Structure formats: structure tokens, C-alpha cells
Length: 541
Image (cartoon, rainbow, N blue to C red; front, side, top):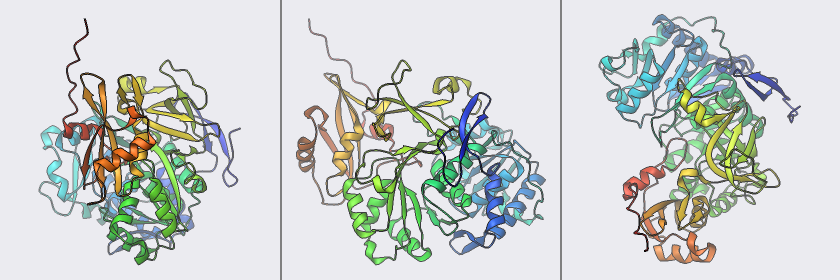
């Protein structure tokens, strides 16, 4: 038998046609089951706060069932795809669970995308309904480009769209559709760092499993609350924010965008207890505000992902907020959020590790031939478990390329130490090859972010006709805080000579990231003009 949790033992189960995975024995049957259980147990708990709106679980469920009836009246049935071009807000949560009530599949769209990407997702998913925020309505392709769309609604008035409010004018639907937990519940399109974006199929089983993992490993319950400030239309906001809080019947506080002072004021006002953000957000809170000005005594779980937390940030947060436990969480869209979580009492001493595998997860380090390497050696991380998606929507070529025997090939280079802690060193495609020396950029970035004044760092390869690639660092720094020479001296004292950046770009704006918190190194290289490979050096004769 797999490892057990004292509150919820696990057992092996057969899913997705040919997989056997360790699953929580006691769990809701599907995504709507998360909400139904919360309503049954804590109907009067505050479920959702957004500006002046405040809904209990019972009130939220009524609006969700009204919206479900409205969607059903426009023809949405089990298995149909319902697309959402929505920013963070109450409608996003309502439509998510209204679609789940009907057994439909949500397709959250990236509000930072442009029309070609939106068109691809709508066409590939064959969405039949679309709900948009009016401010993003110009991104929607013309009707002739999206023939499967038969119903379009807008939050606030937009030409050519029905009013979202009409969905809530129906009597609440009574009976939820039966939805098999192995079926897709949400299709999330990957950020498309290479090639055409792929639609990862998040299932009811995976969503419930990941929400339960967050709840169990972070000890979350009905008195907890989170501010969802990362985008709800990506896996972190959707799973770690919305579904996890519903799983434990806690409170979702919605913010449209992250501004440190506004975030901290909101956290103090509502007694926020739990967050999951990228390290740069924590760093900005320290650089742009005084934490002692806010009552943050309730904040006890500080989850983060996308990059290591700088040692200086850990120390400053520990000093200012001694009750806050920082917990690194590593995952991806394909793993329905967390694949590993770091216990808070290990964060400071294992800063460069992303933690241990979550309950039910298997992680192996594999070489290019598909063979496991010894503990401590590096290779590609392969991940398997109930939370790993069964594949990509209607993309068998990508399935064959990126999955093997239920394992998802992450594309991350890493290792597992003797105590089972996982280390993520680099993306395969981001590793720098300087004259034959393989340089893991995460190691260099960790050294750079230890310098006072550095908010975040990205190391990229600068093409070179002599060495192939050279090391270049791009940093977001506080104004007048650090210069390139200080960085060079620090790196020279901490790294091998071939690892040290040979050139720097310093900026006062945050580095571009996708909504899952991963720095977009391809975009950085394009901005720097590093995306074209120089001609090879002439051979000696």
C-alpha cells in the first residue's frame, strides 16, 4: 500500500485507461462535489469576497446553480466546452462551478494573449459558449472564425454579446450532472514557449487530488482564507486558489492585480492566512512597503513557486513575520499544480530544494535514454500520479512525445538527494553550454538574488561564435541599489569562473513571467536580440 495520511489514507486505483495511481480514498467525486461538500458542511461560511461583494457558500451555490440553468437554457450539456476570457472576479468562480454542475468542460483563456492565441484555443477546444469581461471583448475573433460558438456573454456591456447577468435570472438548477472523475473538467492551454500551445486536460480526479494535497500538506481548513491575486485563468490561481479553498470550505478573497501596498492592506483587513505567489511578489512587499504597518498576524502559510526564494527574503520575512511558514511548491499545468511541497520547517536550510513529492506522486530522474540515474545525479524529472493529466486535448503526437507509461516528462533538469528532496536545476532548453561547460542557470540566479537590492534574476545564453554560448544575466533591482561591478565581484567569490555572467542587463521593472510564475526566458532573449544563432566560428586548418 502507498503511504497513508492519518486523516485520509491512500490506496492504489485504476484510472485513465492504463494507469494505476495512489489516490485519496475519501474524496469528492468530481469538481462540483468540492463545492457541494463545502455547502453541506459550512453553508454560512464566507466563501467569496471581491470588493463590495461577499457571498456565503449557500449564497454562492445558488448563483452557481442559476448560472448553470442559464447555460443549459442556451444548450450547454455534459462534455461541452465553455470558454472564459475573464480576469479575477466573482464571475470566474461562478462559471467554473456552473460548468462543473452541468458536467461541461471549462476552457480558461489567457487575458494577456492576443487574438491568434484566443482563436487557436477556441477552435481547438470547439468551445460552444464563451463568457468574457467587456475589456477583453476586442480579443474575441469574429463569428465567422469560430463556428462552434453559439452563445457569447459579457460581464458589463459589449457589442455583440449577451449580458452575463441574464444567466443569473433563471431559477436555480436542481440536479447536477453525473461527471466521471476521469473525464476532462478543464482544458488549460500551455504558455506556448515552443510551438503551438497544447490543451492540457485537467480531470476531476486530478483537481480534487491536488486540492486535497494542498489542504493536507498545508493544514488548511474552514477558518483559512487566501487572496487570489495570481491569475485565476492559470493553474496556480485555479487550483491552489479557488479549488483548494473550496475543498477546505475556506474564504477566497479576490484581487484583480498585484500591488504590494493594496495586497498587504487587504490581507490585514480580512485576516488572510494562506498565499501562493512567486518569490518576486514577497520581495516586492519587502521593498515597497513596511510590513510592520499592517496587522499580518493571521498569515501563517506562505506558499511560493516558479523560482527559489532568495535567502535574504527568507530571513527578512522570518524576522518581520515569525508566524509565517514558507513552503516551496513545484508543479506545472500538466501536474494540476503541485508535484512537490517543502515543509515549512525545512525551507531555510533547504532553500534550493523544491521539497518532497506530494502524497501519491512518483518522481524519477531519467537520462536521455530513459534510464533512472543514481540518487544525487542529474537528469530529466519524470512525474507520475493521480494529479498528472492524462494527456493533451486532441493532440496524440504531443501525448506520445511527452508521456510514457503515465509519467509526464517535465523538461526540467534536476536531482533527488539521499533524503528524498527534489532539486530543480534548469529547463533543458535553458541550460547554458559555454565551450562545453554545462551551466545550470538556477544556480547562478540563486547567487545573484542573494545580493542586496536584487529583486529577481534570470540567466540566459548569449550566442557566441567562439564558445557557442556565454552567460548573460538580466536583473530587476531596486533603484540605486547595486551595480554590475558589485554583481561581478559577488559572483566571482561564489561561482566557478565559467559560471559567472560575462554581461548584465539591469532594469527597474519585473521580469516577464507567464501566469504560473515561470520567467519567460525566450521573451527576454528576444528582447535582447539573443534569439538568433550567430554563424559558427571558422574551423582551424
